[in-house]
Image (cartoon, rainbow, N blue to C red; front, side, top):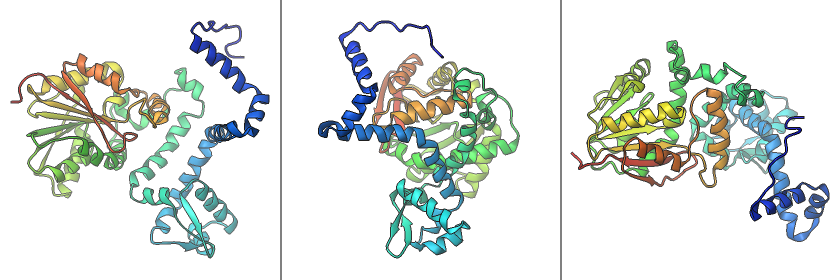
Length: 381
């Protein structure tokens, strides 16, 4: 039995002794049965039972969502409710299994049943229609599930190489074929669109002259910046193969003259010239050493008074703790690079990189991204 023969240290503080007593009580099956029936504790007991079951069944819930996306259910219902028999035919499922899927989706808040044996979108299903990047991430999770098939091996470092490390070649510092860059750049772009507006809502760029987006992918973030701030000189920096794709895409969007795309490895340094640098979902992809070096490079590239905009989902976000600590914690481990960090950790790293004034700018959906703005000492040039 793992851990047999290892005696945990005896709790010393009063709070720890109380916690140990409480845990023994909650673990007792007789107490659990009593709490589930006692009026004052019944609600808590039932919520805890549901939460524990949700942890056990989470993979099944995710697969229900995957099936709905692969069968294009939400697009079918986008124009309005559809009768059950027509849905079964359009989904190409036996009627009994179509109803099984729809009831499962209804229980998860994705669809709703209506009079006349019809189904329509519920709030979560409708939200998915407006966020196509979510569908891309759900499909992408097939790789993550494969890497998490044996989570203990992954945690012990015995599951290399992982599927995700192959999907994100920059995580291991290896070169990749052009189609690999195309694949992950498209996924990043689709998911980037969800947070670009939130990040920009939190940032005042009215006095900024030039912004360089480091690790900018195919330019989705800078496309949003260009729409809001036509006065800005915009530069995208990413690996040469990615920057080439970004240049072609932005030209098709009519932004070829607005956004300069530069190819380069930001681990080798950052070019100067911009008075603001953005790192959108970049730092958490890197281990502490490379991440600290990147922040120092950003400080060195900025003029006195220049600002760094750091935006990403962060560990310990109130109300979204599982996103930063559980999801990104295991995802980045499987990817082979990076870790989720708390806002306080990132602020410490920014100070060590040389930044002085650091503050967090509130975002509409901190679950998706929080924003830290750090300024380099000196007068704005």
